[in-house]
Amino acid sequence: MPVVRAKLSRLLGLIGIDSVDLLQDILFNLKCESEIEGEEISIEVQSDRIDMFSVEGIAYAVRLYLEMAKPSIIGITDKVFRVYVDAPVKRPYIAIAAVKNINLDEELLRDLIEFQERLHTTFGRSRRKVAIGLHDLDKLPSNTIYYRDIDIDQTFMIPLHDYRKMSIRDVLKTTEQGVVYGSISINNNMHPAILSGDEVISLPPVINSNITRLEPSTRNILIDVTGTDIKAVEAVLNAIIHTLTVYSNIVVAAEIMYPNQKLITPNLAWRKMVIDVDFISKWLGLEKEYIHSKATTALMKMGYMLNNVGEKHIEVLVPYYRSDILHQVDIVEDIAIGIGYGSITPEPVTAIEMEGERIIDRAITRALRKVLVGLGYVETNTLTMVPSKFLELIGVGDFIKIVNSPSMEMDALRNSLLQSLLILLVNSQHLVLPIKLFEIGDVILRCDECYNKWVNEQRIAWVIMDSEIKFEEIHADLYVILRELMLDGIAAIKRCSRTSFINGRCGCIEIDGEVIGVIGELDPEILLKIGIEYPVAGVELSVDKLSTILKPRKN
Figure (cartoon, rainbow, N blue to C red):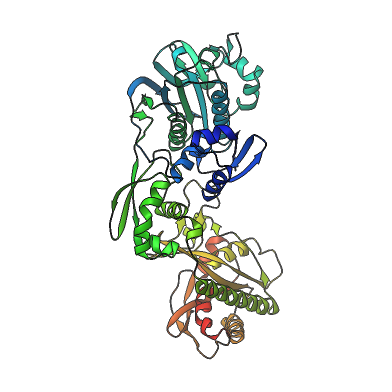
């Protein structure tokens, strides 16, 4: 997590308090760890709170929490810049703005550069995702700006802290920043550049030009943010604007002219979100009356403005700089922080019941594991992620497909453990038969009544692959499992139809009318599709449902 270091006196001065103990208590409430060494304080902040990556951002959050400040809306003073974008191949997005009338000094300049590097290293992924340029606005050659790929041999600039004009190729080869970051966005002989007039003022994500260098005498600061993700680019610009508006509210915007659209940056609009009071009550374990009495103050302490407070819903405005707020559960967490976790009393009975459920779950999985190992099965442990192509091949639907997954081969979440076991069997046919595998793990199922429409369920599954399979073999192993759990007298197998199983050779396992699992032989046509040449039979049971059934019998 990022660590913000600052002079203790400077932070206390920005907040307007003199108590170090109070400061550390509030920082702890805001999920920040702090340590004081002499005249300096080090604060470890949450990696998603980029608005708190600066001393000013931390001071503002503390002032809100102490109710020394109230949330307020910042507006755009003027639209001065026009940026023409011919989107660079490797780095297509840009956002630009300026803040005027800042009394910059050596200390503020140093803190600002450290803030920039903190954003680069963490949220910006070492400048690969997002990079930032800070400029003296008064030194800008022209208010008309161009962002495009340029030829590295035909274009020249004066790099930061240098006086020589050199080709972009030489900048990438000879400067320290060029050596470290020059390979990120280069595309053959082309590289992204920001131009003002006829001058290159920035070579993102590498280095700025010396022409617009910041100095302690700078009063008007221009910010450029470029990157591969437009939302991340705008979020970083907003975080920097939020920091600088501690010193000045004069924000100048830019018109970003893409070939197919026009954007205004920065976008300082507050987002409207609605939180369900029942949802808050369920997640925090608080009575609705208590929520209504505390939520308004708690939300304002965390920087929100309230639009409407109703019996069933609370409508809030989310600050423009809070890019970490994605779902109402994020606001619920802020309500808990605003109330104070120390003020939320846990219910001991609930904790005991949960521990009892965990004990039952562990006892069930331990018994199942012991029995299956004794029956000659080998335990496996696979990922919940599987290839979507595999699921489609075996006719599975209603699963989660991951957008922008880290691997094209693992881009879906399984809704059955048998899917993972089949993938293992595809790659195990060279082994001596029979092959007997089992796994205990989670699957992800659709849940219409759940807040995110999906839910995890713990299951156990086992399979046999052999040159010849008899239903009686897999059924006998299921009987041993049920007998071990003392459910053999009440469980029944009823004929049913399930994807991937042979019609007429598939049964649903029921207890008191509830389906807890499935048993059967896998369809040979599906096995051939995925490349399995031998017959396979399998069983899958819900451990969660078994736990519910066995809970009354836990003694």
